Image 1 (tube, rainbow, N blue to C red):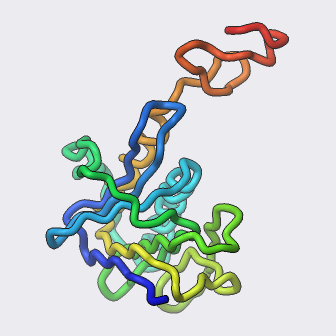
Image 2 (image 1 turned 30 degrees about the vertical axis):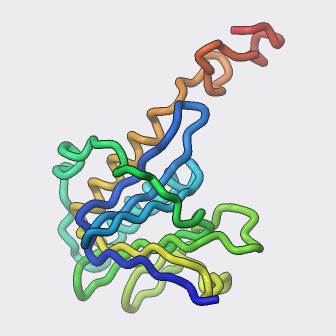
Length: 198
């Protein structure tokens, strides 16, 4: 079976967003450009890790290659819009790959479909001194027949993506002040209160 590569180099818009109520949200990465909109589903922890690793990638690119990093996420201020509708899931993400292209001073993000053997979230790191800085483990190369979403972002657009992704992750249910577990609107059974409803 042939795979599809949804490439946006660069996209008009690339954001993380959710569908559903806190506690029952589905997380998506969505890219728009050239009259196309592609949405891929992933886990909350993947969005959080992606934001963290992108921040590390930008810091490393600045240190190793002297890339000027934007101070304020200018684009994020303007993009608080919801995901483009309809949100049709192309595939569920199993592996995320990151690289910094020194020649074009851009960040490449690749979301790869979950294969049959993907049992957990993968986000590896490879510190190669030559060429792009990758965040994908070469030993666990994903299957070539899996669909992919590939986007290429400027450092400014990357910083804006990081800012929005962190806000999306933090916008869930508030934590219980005693145990730290998420609070449902009806409360929860708090282990710190010996199972009494809080």
